[in-house]
Length: 188
Image (cartoon, rainbow, N blue to C red; front, side, top):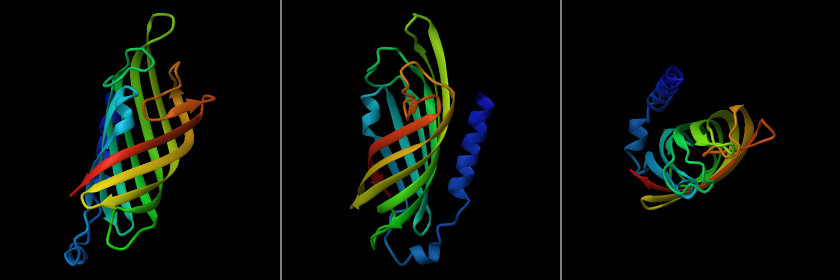
């Protein structure tokens, strides 16, 4: 498992840094190119998530999320502990003039959630699920604040939890995954 985390982190790092930000074109405008996001709903469902987004090309950006499972309100009362990662690439469909981060977008995304929890039979159980999802969302920039809303669905695989909640997506029928989020963002 540790080798997979390292490989994923290296892939995301290369993805975020591999594309130039077209410095000459950017010098002519004041677009913000980076954003840190906090997923507000995650705290009330037992995890803390921080997302970094970086504009890679006009109308496109890469996004990486890391989270700690077991922080916040434990709504299922199962004492979870673990982590999660997500990586996605946004394609803006409708982008307003004057903002590199605002607009309607589609986002293919990979997510991996891994954690231990107290099962119904009283034993400590491990869950590890991965998914590939397609998301659609809208992001609005208001000065240095961005609000980001999205929903998505996809196909997952792995060891689901008894609750079917993977702290980043919901698993149904052993393979169908669903997600939605509301994030607040500070840009720079």
